[in-house]
Image (cartoon, rainbow, N blue to C red):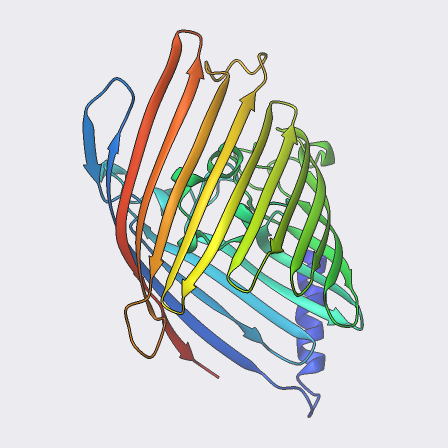
Length: 334
């Protein structure tokens, strides 16, 4: 890993000499407020600030061949005030979220590229591809909610000339590790082969991952633009413990209004002793509204997400509601 960093930094110094190189950097600051009443099967209603958070995304190009991306999660609401500093206390842990989502450098040479740093594992799943500040965990699969995809590592890949097809191989620390790089045994790390095609109306990706803690993970994602305003998508995931599938429908009602509907199912292996339930239906309807006349800087959302969990003693039904707003402050730094 240190060799990769040294290689990228030396390359940065080299390409800085290129008079044709253009550097640019933008900073996106994203505060998000959520008001979330919830009903848990067999219990009473509860209310909290849910996914209220603060993110920043700093990315750009240091030269025409060298780019960077840094995403930080500075604040996350927690109902336990003693745990307000959890994002920072978990800094050295691979199995938990912390204040650095990712921080990496990417060097591109012709059709090939190499990156190093902290990144998200390229499991072929559109839930994972989406930025966290655009996601609603109540509508997502068990894999998204419980698999810590932000890991340190490196990635090597190839893109075609118009960058519609990407093939890559990634090696990272494992979500099951207590701390990053805690062992030199390569069997305890995670390896992902990913291919991604993004066309005008069709996007398809597939991946195979071997994780030291989760075993084999196969994933497939697809999105098809049925019309200019309607898109259908699916995510399929198979692991040693879990099988998951979902179907989503996105509709652009107008320039200021968008709707998302989703339906999915998680099926758990009977030998996964950590969890007492066998399956879960999850679903949701999301409305995104952009009230500002001349921009989409402000987004207001409304969401309803019911789910049904099957266990040895029967089924429980949960209902999650959310209303909130996200604002996007963008600055050109250089």
